[in-house]
Length: 66
Image (cartoon, rainbow, N blue to C red; front, side, top):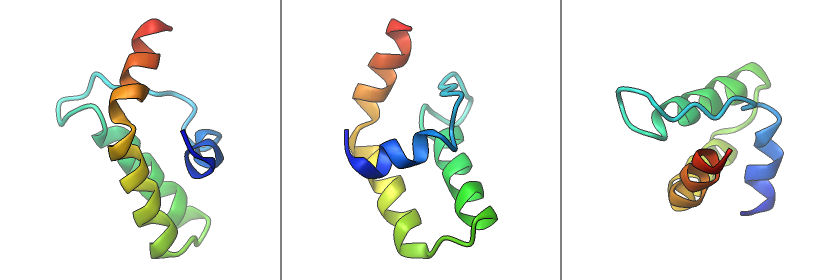
């Protein structure tokens, strides 16, 4: 799914997709919080969220299998 997503998987251990705002809202919020906490730049954050959006179906499918 990409090195960037794997790099952020440690920061987002619980993939909870049953949220009111949609499947990626909580995941994207955790990525934003992680970037803020570790002073990561805006470019990395944008690439991460873009990657999450692009792979959302695979991520959701993987979660439902677990």
